[in-house]
Length: 234
Length: 220
Image 1 (tube, rainbow over the protein chains, first blue to last red):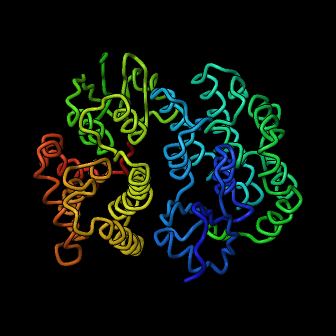
Image 2 (cartoon, rainbow over the protein chains, first blue to last red; image 1 turned 90 degrees about the vertical axis):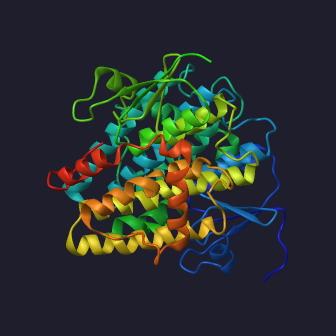
């Protein structure tokens, strides 16, 4: 097919939060990897070969074996390279709580944010309201479930699983505000915004997140002009 | 290893997944059957976010979401592991469990609750997803290999509930002709002791589906 790749290869796109998650995890663990930028309007043969089921990014290929789905990849990275820092806590009950909230973020928060960007007028107002309600559930839940206050990774020096899962997506909120609408009501969610702000300042996050202006331009192009877009090409 | 309680529901595949895992590992537990039309204060207290079953209580500490619970169970009780040991195989198990929950099962539910054109479309989609899943089985007896693993447990809706749903609706989705390998797996699955002893009574489930098909949509 093509020249043999490095031991660890990540197929991704620069704007995808799911891909940012994987980059954060790899960098945190000090894992050397090769990054391949995909054009989702013209998917490479490699991508289709390595993720025939979903045909999406991110896909991590380790010694030629592919893993897809960002949360699955993150757990794989933690299992396979079990050096410090651990992405997930070691205690089973703490792990369960982290997994619960990671799932909540992906199954509730992210789809709700899509509902906001893909709607207009009254529909969008309602979508924003619902999004903020879900954010309250997230905030209250995390404060209740984890002993440290926001940012809850405060006791550790390294990012944790939820910092990565949430941060890779949430840290881009300003780009979304510029391009589409203000989604997070600051008065309603000071804890969440404080967490996200601290995450944005984290050097590893700063260097891994997509550049603000480029992302805002991309979001403007995708969301504010066209009525509805196929999410799969994001 | 501490007190174990399970808030569940007799007919819920999600709830049964947890029971399968606990029984497979020989973990004693107290089962609390929830009436989902009239949820108990206990359920609302222990799963305020989703207000759903199953919720596992281990020494009073609640864990919700069936696959999260399965991971917890495997990490806490080491007998008869349900997840593979090797990180890559483990990742594959997680991938397929997610695929079943995010693609296969919603398509199947959509068939049951929709009609006409929407139902035809749902059937088409379910066939595609189940074919993908069937390919993953290849020549293995179970998704977990020689013995059942987490993917088999998570596939319980396909393994048992689907047959009941097909009878209730008259829809033939999984047949031996269309899905030879998956049909084989279903036969093995329901014969397997730890599975068959943890299924809801078939007649009761059939009646429940029939009555709900004539009523507004069932919410867990």
